[in-house]
Length: 218
Image 1 (tube, one colour):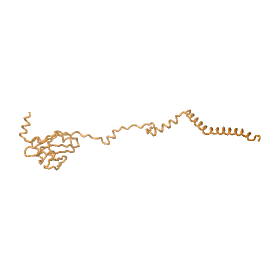
Image 2 (image 1 turned 120 degrees about the horizontal axis):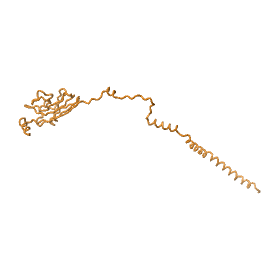
Image 3 (image 1 turned 90 degrees about the horizontal axis):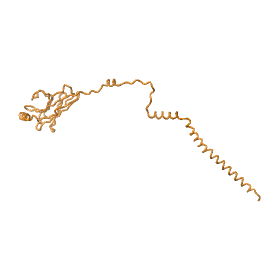
Image 4 (image 1 turned 90 degrees about the vertical axis):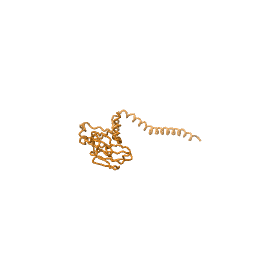
């Protein structure tokens, strides 16, 4: 079966001088870029992008073509730019529609049959985002609750916890605290007074014992 490529090369020399991606896909309403490469020696030739016309000659169905330079050429929704250094040209199709899907050719214009590569373009459906009206209609409205709302703020929760603690506190639990306060007051006020009384009593007794000694017979 390799005889057919060989015969093709002999009958149409340079027919594989242009290569493309083979197949590309772009979204509807979007864009797609196709890069085709060519062999050395064709830098200054015109490059083209066309629909499949079922003929070796595409000059009557070019969608867009260069003038042999690297200047970008735009025609409608299609543009083409050649890069002589990379020996590649890029075709960009914008605002794709389902009708754009099909078979295309990217190639080099020359005397006789053009050099080209076939590219199959597929246009995928566009992913449409819901409109504001659709988004609003998709929102489920919950019925209003008759029960009082409960705040979930951490500060409110902490304050409620303090309030519950103070209101639920057992009255009997406060009695030890009152006893501790009473004991503290007793220690601070009554104990020093008691010590003073004892000290005064001791001094009084001591002075009463010394007085006879002082007034005794001389």
